[in-house]
Image 1 (cartoon, helix red, strand yellow):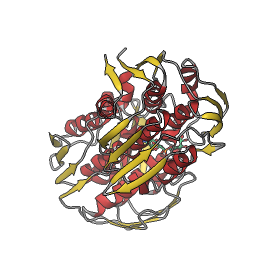
Image 2: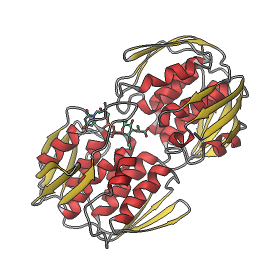
Image 3: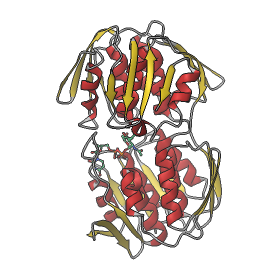
Length: 416
Ligand code: EPZ
């Protein structure tokens, strides 16, 4: 099993430029399918999930040219609404192709996205939302098959502001007949990014940035280009690594407005920030205070994707913290791995108590999923001695070059 090896205990210092956002790039790639023409995306991260999505588009007949972090997609020749089962199963977020395929082909055939180690990850909100827009869904030969005579705008209220379901609704509604009114939609920055991208293609969307979107269907979209936002979860990961090592770092290209609650928690831990010329400076030399209580929430609350990295940083704070996970039921699976490094994390259902002891010791640990793996890297940076984090490929699903980035910040990290 591939690994990262870290020699920890030194403060991070220096500056790096942030990669583009994985969770913005994926829905925008789905959006490219909607248009029988060209889409150019800049600042696309070079990570496994993106290469899987590119292969899925290519198998559908799209021409995709990659040059550095620039992707040129020509979807004019796309000729099938079927997502390759093998590829689709590798990435559960392939479910967000459903809305775009229904909009383009009036049909979508894709594998059922399984659950994963962080949770069951149901798709009921996706299914009911597509049905409300005029699609009929059923299981055929183990695949999810959706068909429509033509999508029609409708009023949809989500019982939970699901990010993926919101993305599917937007992608299905932009070329549907009539108007779609979405209530209680997700309003993560990645949703705003998708709306802005689609507006640039000629879509008519209002209420962007709020939980109530109004989407008026249009006949066709147009060629466009778009530069992706920086990855706020990668940014937060590096900030928690700087806090855990009491370091001082600068993130070039960061957008603090996308991560206010994360910065709020880091300030409670003792970190200080400056933001000048799109550079976010963090001084983590005093970031050793515990946090009495943090609960993950949908945006603009504290993001579930940074909960494990926060937990790792709290393990080396000096005192007791309490963390509640309200989104994914299995996010605390990382606790036993942290405890192997000398942490004192006690999990009780949706809550974890961290008795921060100020230090950790290096150990061999194993990542089972993307953000938990990133948290083990954070812990390894803070731990005295050598830490080997197995399951490197989980982490590389979302981090373009975590070893290179951390190396630029002074970390001693290698991979094998
Ligand atoms: C997106 O996943 C992100 N993935 C996740 O990031 C992120 O953790 C999550 O949003 C929450 O912010 C991508 O953008 C590719 P949800 P998604 O639908 O869309 C329940 C990462 O590390 N739910 O908002 O799958 C579900 O069980 C990944 O980059 C239903 O009940 O998240 C969960 O409890 C991990 N029914 C909650 O909603 C549904 O039909 C959040 O799910 C859909 C979701």
